[in-house]
Image 1 (cartoon, helix red, strand yellow):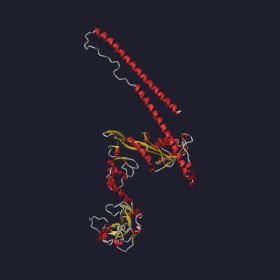
Image 2 (cartoon, helix red, strand yellow):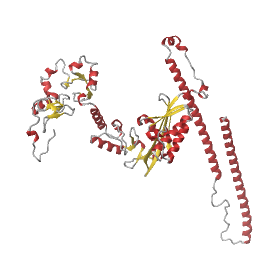
Image 3 (spheres, helix red, strand yellow):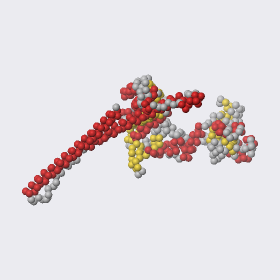
Image 4 (spheres, helix red, strand yellow):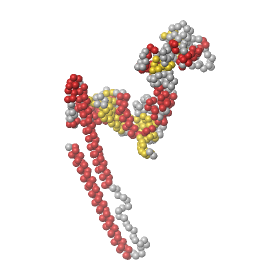
Length: 540
């Protein structure tokens, strides 16, 4: 029936087009005939006039143009453009309907295949070995369009996210909004996703944007003829509104909440669920993409057409390929501003976060390779790794060209694959360079020599750890027995608190328990306590 109506519309449009073109041709013919008649009349009049007035100062009389000095407005072209536009809209609508029908059939086929796969998984092994080749359940093409389609009986998930952001569009600061919607099956396999640009009224507040996204998501679900859906949102106040726990005070918000309630009744099952932002990250990205599409503009360059957008830090128009998107919040800044921001934070020993005011999304160092020096990126990744490993769990490869940082438990498990008795001997294999080393002596592995015997050799004394212990002995440094960190007492009492948290006596190394000494050594020495008034206390 719909196909017959579309054919009739197409036929009517074509007839109108032909009639208008014919009318335009007749009008042109009438204008031409009128002009010819007027020119003939003018020629006769001129002949009579020139015979009575022989001495004409200009000779031949000037030709008069009766077509009009001003060009007439072409209404016919406008009508033809409207007809062409209506025809194109009809074609687009037909294509959209065909595409939606195809997606429905594809979704129905997917549900059919998943159910059949579950049935096959539940078949006993003995039955499968005997009759496995005979199991079949072909998909019927008519099932996708029937009223009893499996789509209406399956459960689906609708993820919605609306965003409002103050952005720079050229030299103007404006509020823009965007919505993202994703429809997934019960196992979170993506079926359909779409992003939508929100208008000025829809971008008045974050709550309105969230509700507009929710309405759009439920509309999309109804388009697919889904019967059972759970829609997910990460805005707690909106969740309170749609569950009826809180009444909205603003009339615009209340109207949207009522519209959501009306759409919910069109499903056999439709309930909301609250998630964290990280769980709706993919629709968050869609909504942010809808915003970005509004703030970029085309520009012709020597390399062809490109798009630019304004960096909200430096207010410069930057090409989109030179803009960095922060993972998590998807705020965008130019490479130059991000480079300066991240370098300042890293040099201050801080973790770089999104420069947008109030945003706490972390800028991942791994993603900064686009604008940071690769060496700096590697150094910061190493620092981050060091910070994530406890002091007592760290172990470094002693080979100068490697110096790889590893976790003691991980490198032990790795070494057990290659070295028998690794745990008792202290031998470890570097996970990067592959060389063996001793975790107790902190030197390359001493084959067939115990750690006690090796510590008495010149090789140990000339090695890095041996030289350090020799220097510590001469300087009277104390080594923490928990993390092996060297401590030097410059001033203060003999109660030492190591960076690993272990407390001990600097004189004898005995442990302090509950802020009390377990040895009889003096707690302080007057020479380490009393200093000159203007003296700057050295580091401890």
